[in-house]
Structures are given as structure tokens and as C-alpha cells.
Image 1 (cartoon, rainbow, N blue to C red):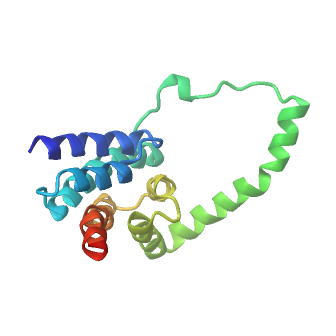
Image 2 (image 1 turned 180 degrees about the horizontal axis):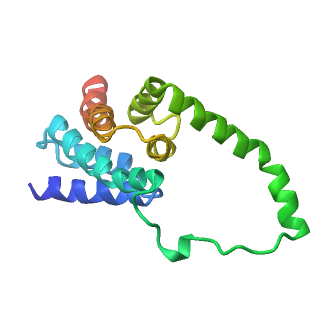
Length: 168
């Protein structure tokens, strides 16, 4: 039970801090503790991940006020900043078009979010924020995210046993 609590805590932390790899932790834990069910481990990690990503979802939705250090002060445009603004204009317009399409076709967003929660492409963090931006229903966000993350992490937890069975 302690291992599952640790797994949930690390999953929650990895959802907030992107450079913590929960995938490596799940594979390592499944290899080190084979008595822990891969389905139970997948469920616990999925709950931790979706719980942590809820903060990004609410931030994308505008329900959470971000800390002051994340807000930039308006500064005068310098030549360097103007060049950067021109270079990123295409990216900003692409994001605006993507957001508008997702708002017009909410089923596309649900599909992209579901695929991302299993495969990781497009990046799951980006689809979480986009789901908040287009105001995806919370029940849809949680159910699709939990299902996809459960599949992903259950397969990852089962992988050490599968590879051991194939090799030996």
C-alpha cells in the first residue's frame, strides 16, 4: 500500500513538473515490486496524473489565477522583441486557428485529447491546456484522461513481465 501511495504522489508531482518521468518510475517499480498488480498501479498513477493535470486544465480555463512571478510586466518594444514578435506571428496565428476549430468541433478535441492521453502525441500537457482553453466539460476531461492514462500506465507496468516472459 505504501508503494501505491508513493506512486500516486510521484504521478501527481510529475503532472505538475514536466521533467519528472513517471514512465521510468512505473517501469522501475513494476520490475522491482512484481507483487503489485499492473492494473492497480496503472489506476493509481492515472488518478495521480489526471489530478495533477487538473491544475493546468483550470489554468487554461482561466479559473485559477497564476502566481505573480508567472505574469510578465508590459515592457516597451525593442528591436529585438519586435523581431521575435514577427517570427512567432505564424505560431500564434496557428494556435488561434487551432483553438477556434476545437471550439467549433468539440468532438475533435475529445478525440485528440483521448489519443494524447494514451500515446503522448500530441504532447499531453499541451492538450490538457487546450482542453481548458476550449472549455471542455470537466466530466469529459476526467473520464477520457483517466481511461487513456490507465491504458498507458497499465501497459507500461505490465511491460517488464512481458519482456521477461519473452526473453526467458
